[in-house]
Image (cartoon, rainbow over all chains, first blue to last red; front, side, top):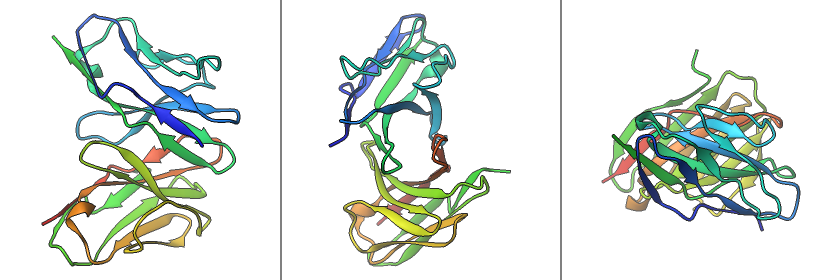
Length: 109
Length: 111
C-alpha cells in the first residue's frame, strides 16, 4: 500500500534559520513525489517535484530511495514561507496522488 | 482566466439539506478530482474522473455523488448533509504528466 508520512504537524523556526520538513513514503513501485504548499487563504499549489530537480523559492528536495524519504529543505527561512506543506506520492498506475497529513511551517521574525 | 474554478467559495447550510459544489477547469485536462480537507488539515482524495468516467472512488458515504457532464466539469452533490461534512473541498485537475492544479476550495459549514 502506498503511504506518505509527515511526522511533524508543526515546525516553528526563526527567520534566517534552516528548515527541513520531513517526508517518508512507502510504495513498491517507482515513486514520483511532490511538495505542495498552501499559503493562508490560498489554493494548494505545486512547490516542486522530484523529477524536475529544481529549486523553487529557495526550497529543494532530494529523493532518497534508500531511506524512502523526500525531505524539503531551505537554508534560510523567510516569514513568507509560513504555510501548510504537503508531501504527495503519485501512483503511476492509478493516476492518484496520495497526500501526507501536512506540516505547518511557522517562521517568526 | 482561472484554471480551476469552484463555486461557491463558501457554503453554510443546515443539517439534512442537499447541496452541490461546481467545478470547472479550462486547462484541457482529462482527469479531475475532489479532495476533502478536514479541520485538522488532512487532505484526502474522494473521487477521480477521467474523461467523464469514474476511476477512483475512495471510502466516501454514498450521500456524496460526483457528476461529470463533460471532461471540463466535475460537480459534487451531497445529500442529507451532516455536521461531519463540514470541511474545505478542493477540486483539482491534471494530465498524466502534469502536477495537480487545484481550485481555491469551497468551505462548507453544516450547522
